[in-house]
Image (cartoon, rainbow, N blue to C red):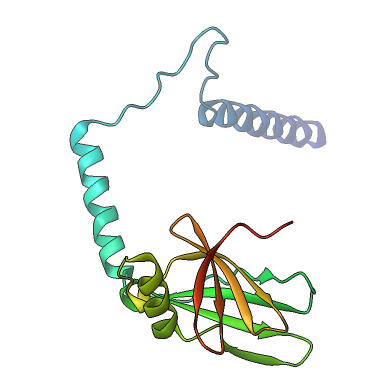
Length: 171
């Protein structure tokens, strides 16, 4: 009787093992042969146009909703102060000066007066809200600025807002 139970148990166990091995084999997909290659995906023109439309919708949803997302400090030679540009609603540009050692943040200059002064000297009209200054340095204890705008270097006295054309600063 014990040998009969033993054989039945052995038969049941071996059947379960074989069944489990066969089930595992059935689940695994066959591996691709080494020489076969998968064709590159090429979207149709219609698929591309749908994606462009979706991207345009996302762009229009986000436009004029997020501002001041990046702040890139442009450090002065003294290492204690920097200026940065904010791009705000309707592509308006603001420039700020930060003196870290004194804990002071202020507008870098009077945008309207600077636009008017540069326009007077250059003969070109500038919108004070869209002055595109790419380089700016403070001189004479912050009473003068030298800046690059429209591929030209300018120097401005911040007390009188007199502007003169100048060459690029050394360094």
